Length: 371
Image (cartoon, rainbow, N blue to C red):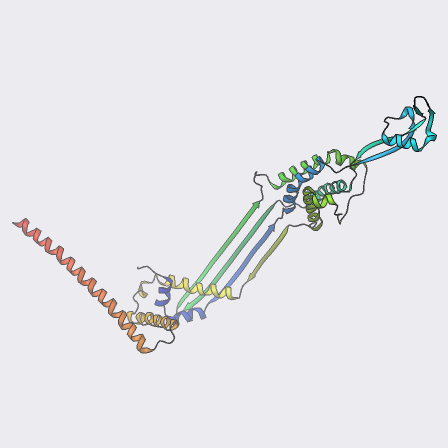
């Protein structure tokens, strides 16, 4: 059997039989779908990982100021006599116990004592303290319903049964088509760490921040946490480390909800739409393929087939150029006929010439053998 193409099956078939086949189709198409998609967003984790080093820079070089604690104490209890102490004594002579006119020595009974102490209780440090507290709370909240990987489950199934008849011939078909996609994407960083590994690493880094002197100092004061909006102090506006801290603060304020997106759709129904019509048409094609095995129908009427092929070609030509008239079409056909006919004649003459050449050579060789 020569190579078959789908277009050949339709060209060789009988249009009336095809129409009869389609009109008598009795079919059912069951469609089952199972779609389950989960898309995880770990932007929060990436942003925290990117910001943690800037928070470490801030706590290593914290914003601080000096607190002067002034107290008037007995002279023997004074730890340090400063310029401020002398100025205060000159203004408060009642604190002078004895004065030696000859030597000019002054002996006070009491004196101003000033204790200077560094304090980390600045707005900027309280902001960082509050940010770290919020980070811990944010991570705990995310971990409660954490989905560590995106996934896609897309399963489709079609069950098709049908029957039809052409004359006395009964035809039936039963087929099942399955399609499955199961894809899981475990998000890992460049070092190969999983999401849970990255979260554990981040929590360890945050724990290191909470053990810093600044954090511990503010924590002991039991201060109220800073709330939005954040004050735009000079340090917060101009310091690059604080700019990253503010960016993370704003992100957490606006992304408190779960960012995991879930889509699910399961269906099970009998289809009567265009989908079923397409499958019915494929049933006809399957029948034509099966029918090509019938040797009794292999000898097709050449004249009928030729007319059908020519008709199809003329229709395509007319569709390309609707302005083409009958004379132009005839001239085109005559020209192509002459070219193809000439090729055929030339090919036949070449074959005949080659064949005659080798036959003559063979006969000469035979004569030499006889001599």
